[in-house]
Amino acid sequence: MSQNKKTKDEFEHYFSKNPKSSYKTFEIQIKGLDIEFSIYSATGLFSKNKLDLGTKILIQNLIYEPGWTVLDYGCGYGVVGIYLKLKESTLKVYAADINKRAIAITKKNIKKFGFSDFVALRTDSLKPLIDKGIRFDAIYLNPPITAGFSVIEKMFREAKEALKPKGIFEVVVRNLKGGKKVEKLLNEIFDHVEVVGKGSGFRVFLARKNQILISRLKPPANS
Image (cartoon, rainbow, N blue to C red):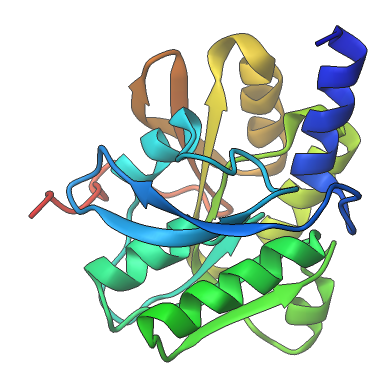
């Protein structure tokens, strides 16, 4: 596959409102975490056949507490939100994505597990949620680097606005694929940024809009 074709395909998987590939749904196994489960996926979605390494590293470093309202931002087939609900049923989970197919599959997965307090919505902006007064204790993102840093900056700024005063924003990024730019951008937008996890060439950043000590917050121990 040529580099141009690969880049075009990656962009569609990451950030296309209506993927043009044929629509086929199927189940995949989510492995390598402290819990394993199967979920629906589909053509036209990022990493459609298996859990991608960046999202796996993010999931292994998720920070959450019972009763929180959280957002799986750029949710794809909804694996981050599904993992969180399986681990902590008291969470109110939102999942958002620009991709029509991603939201259809996430809703299919919500139905598969019979989850309540789990909302999936198609949007290219958090403004509709912000305007409704919805705010999050935590937002989680594996950013669409191939969509460009103007898109990333918009996502980061809207995430900051959508956080509660003490809310947290966790972002995973590959060190050699925009890692330094992401770190710089986070530090420009948020008052406090730190690394809370790393592995296999990825880092997980934790950002908060207010300048307070947050290193006491750690991912729950795997059970």
